[in-house]
Length: 453
Ligand code: BES
Ligand code: MN
Ligand code: MN
Image (cartoon, rainbow, N blue to C red; front, side, top):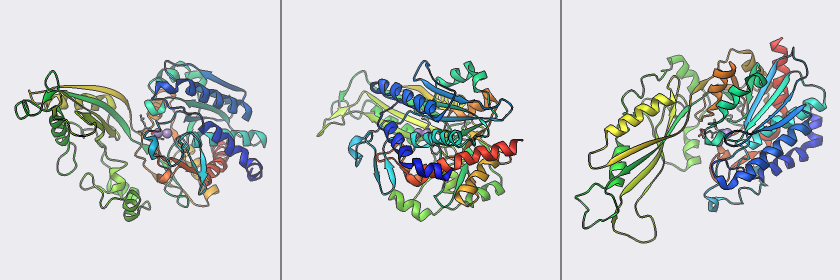
C-alpha cells in the first residue's frame, strides 16, 4: 500500500489541486455552475477509482454525489461522508495567493477548501482507489459527498430519507475535523450543535439628522448593542431564560479526562496574537470551546460606514448571531427561546424581528464501539501513537440526522490542524496530513472488517 502511495504521490496531489481550482462556494449563487462542475469532477474521480456506481443526484439545492462499491453484501458497509462545497473566500485581499489557485508552500497546500473539506474527503477517494487497485478492500463502501454543508445541509435530510435504502450502512466515516498535532493524533467524539439567527432592530421610519432628532429618538444601532450586551452577564454566562436547562454537565472525571489532552495556553494565545483568553467563568479554554454552549455575533451592521463622517441616526440595525449547542440542547427549541427573549428585551422605542437561519443538533459518539476501536487502531498503526479522544467545537449538522435516519453512529476521523485556518483567508492543509490520511483510511477498513466479524 505504501508503495502504491509513493508511486502515485504526485498524481494524488495534482488531482486534489484540480478540484481546489473549482470555486464551489455554496453560499453564493454566482458560483452555481462551479458547484455542478465540482460535483461532476468528484463523480468522475469516484468512477475512476473503481466504484461500480458514481452518480449525481439533484436536490432542491446543490447536487449530492453518490458512489458505491459493493464487494459482498455479507460484509460490513461503511458510508463515507464529506462535502465538496466551501466557504466564501472573502475577504480576497487578505489572501497571500488567490484562493482558487492552489500553491504549495512550506509543505502545505494553500487554497480555499484545502482542508475543509476537499483535501479531507479526497483522501477517501484515493484510499478507495488504493484498496481496489491492491485488492485489499475488506468492506463495502458507499460514498456520499454533498454540496451544502457550509450552508446548513438543509436539503440533505430529505435526501437521506428518500434514499434510506441506498444509504443503508453499518457505520459512517467522516474526515472533516482536526487532530491535536501531527505527533498527537486524536479523534473527535463530539460536535456542537448550532442555532443561527439574524436580527433586525428598526427605529424611525427613515434615517434622521442626528442633531435634530438625536437624544430624543431611539438609535437602533445603540439599542441593538445594548440588547446584545445584555445576553451575557459578567461571568460570561448567557442570560436567556431556559438556555442552560438541557445542558449536560460533565462529571468531574469526564472533565479531568477532557483537560488531560495536551494544550498549551501560552502557545494558543501567541498563535492568535492575544494577551488573554476569555469565556464562561469556571471552565477551561478546552471546555469553553467544546462542551459549553456559546453565543456570538458573527456580523453586525447599520448606519453610515462609508468614507468620512455622516451625521445620521440610522433607521435600522442588523446582526447575525450564532449559538453553539451541546448535548442535550435542541436547535429549534433554542431558536424559540432566543426569539422570545430577544423580543421581550426590546424597548418600546424600537421594533425587532428575528429570522432563523440554519441549525443542527449536537452529537456525541461513544468510544467503546467497534467503529471507534477500528479508527483508534488505524491511527495507532499509521501515527505510531494511540489517538486521544477529544470533543470538537465545530458543527456538522448532518451527523445527528444520520443517527436519527440511518441509525448509525459516525466516526470523526479527521486529519486537519487548528493552524489550517478553516473559513479564514489563507486556508491550508499539510501535505503530511493529506498523505497520512490516505495511509490511515485503508487501515480503518481493515480493522473494521476484522473487528466486525
Ligand atoms: N468541517 C467543519 C466543522 C468542523 C471543523 C468540526 C473543525 C470540527 C473541527 C464544517 O465544514 C463547518 O464549518 N461546519 C459549520 C456548520 C454550519 C455552516 C452549519 C460550522 O461549524 O460553522
Ligand atoms: Mn467541513
Ligand atoms: Mn466548514
